[in-house]
Image 1 (tube, rainbow, N blue to C red):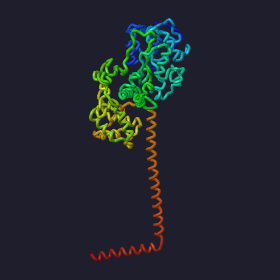
Image 2: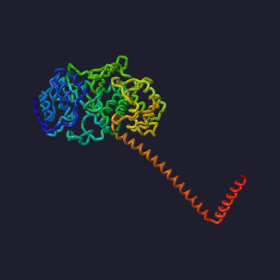
Image 3: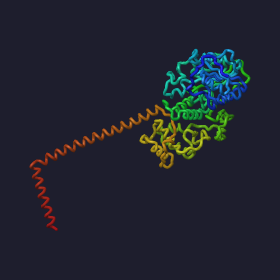
Image 4: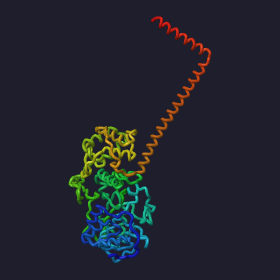
Length: 502
């Protein structure tokens, strides 16, 4: 059933990805069964169907074509602007994992972020639960985006406020804003790598007190997959890892997720783990009794054996980061030690899936199948990222791979690899600029050498020209001719004497 509440957009379709994914699906699955749920904004069909299977779902969308599609699937739908939401509609749960930016239409009043929050709060019954996502305008996804948030990039951004919106700028201000509206916080977390489909969710306490090195490695892997072969300003992997390790993970996350309730406290409060990870399977990380963090599989994925992920999380730092740091310092002994240990312990694991603790090497994700050409992939990261390394003359992938093989104690004959098998990396403009600077330095050095050789050649040419002039000058004098004639007579006399002696 469709109810046109006003402000609906008849010929408009959303052109940005909808909120969804494995982790959002898990969060939705923790909501009370049998509850009356309002899903506000565009969400994926899988997420809506999962909620509809266990609760009475009503969707609020502004796009009339999308409302017709939902109605065809048997979903109760309110089509229109959030400002027109009927006051008598009360729900036990409101889900807004797409945020509050796509709830108003051009056919009605434009509510800011705070006004949208107040409208959703009015739709909650006393004791109701709000599950909300808030995009971070200073998140990693924004900092590496070549486009600007203050300019319209698609049809749904007719009012691109960007960082000038009224939404809170960090988790603390978000909690304060919700408290000011009479909503008590049950759980708050930061999400990576993109707001619409995160693959890593961690609470601020977990990021502060948990295994920062391992979480930094997971965050780097998450953004690396999301931005593979995409144009970015700088490598998001390094930025995400540095933020998490430096204690600024929540401030640079792509979005924040919050579960809050309206007074009085509901009987069934959401109890969510401190860390969730996965892009198909879902894992949780929790602190164990011995202080070590433990992984547990919450949701399986078809075709993957995830039993190897059960157990303690390996300590240590990501091997790729250690290798890059040693390369930047030109620390050859450390590079040889790390490469040799890697080749001996885990020769079929990529550097971004190995953690190093003292002299031990362990897999971060044991479910990843063995890989070939792992050292070549690290060489590609060095060259593609524009990182300084101790072998500046190695400017092509085969040469640098051969050198790294030798440093690891492996044969230096590296087979050729087809171009379509190269590891996809973020297409970073900053790293491109660094590559251009390196090429400019090489060209300047080559130009300087060529100019030196040209000056030397000109100098030798002038000296040779001077000698030729002297020879020509001396060959035209009488004394030179007499000397030349005497030299000829003496040579003939010498030859005759030699014949007479014989």
